[in-house]
Length: 151
Image (cartoon, rainbow, N blue to C red; front, side, top):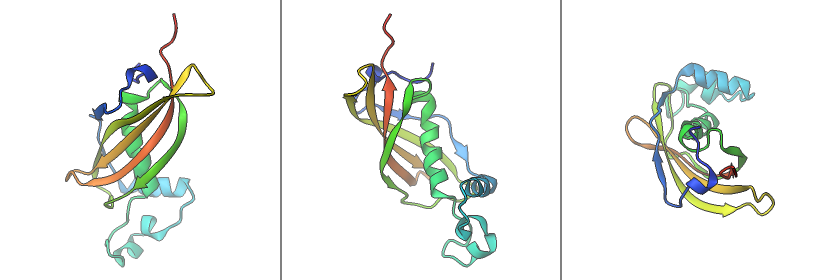
């Protein structure tokens, strides 16, 4: 199991995730279509040519999901019960088809679950970067995590 249990996390612990992903135009169109987002800035190349960017922007919710997804293998794979929420989400730079995204994660808070003593809550700060090492997305995510199983 690649993910870590609640007790295996420490505040300040940092993960530099090895897996990266190059974003494609199809990712953007498919994600926007699947989520019923008809915004021309994402799916209409001709319209996007008239914007300050000159090309379609990658859907920011796809970007957020990708940055968090890149973190899963080393942090929560097989050990998370569920996400409790995201906060402080920001997109300081746009993402375009052809950008390669990588992620880093820092543990910023740990607390016991008051209602589920067999679980704990980890707050992660995720940061996504493009191939130029520009920060493209940040968020804090609270995850309900399993504790080490008792023998």
